[in-house]
Image (cartoon, rainbow, N blue to C red; front, side, top):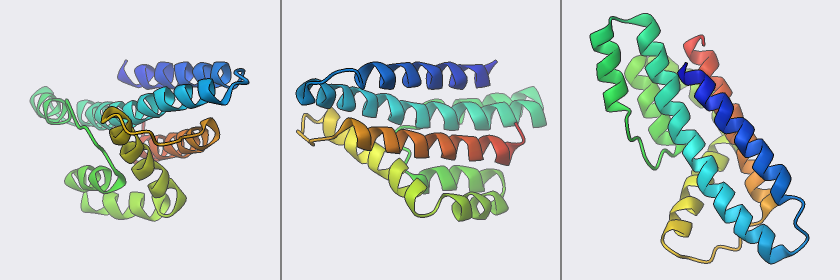
Amino acid sequence: MPLQEIARQRQRLDDLFERAGQFQDMGDQSHWANYLCVLVSGLVENSVRLVYSEYALRCSNPQVASFVADRLKRPGNLKMEEILLIASRFDSKWRSWLEERTGGELKDAVDSIVDKRNSIAHGEAIGLSLGVVKRYYVATVSVVDLMHEQCGL
């Protein structure tokens, strides 16, 4: 089941955050923070793809579900605005519902994790701390949970 894939990814991240927190050296923690930032960004992308594809599978015929899954196959660089746009393509009310619940800190966390992931991918030194990435992760999980709720999953 696709939603189990999200649960497995979250458990893996939880385990990696715990392991990374055991390092005393700030340089080691910084390397782990960068790695975890990339993985958290991947969680956002995978969750959008899997949650909305699962919704389509449960609520439409197989051809429509296949089309939705194909359109969401590689949804890279999903800042909050892009997630809201995807939600609005299912129902214009969904955008408003999700936007009301993800403003402020949650939106900032999703946008920041994507921005920082892009900086890491381009070889920039960003000085990211493990604590900051953990806060982003917690906020990102809240957004994923809201998408589940929105889709009734």
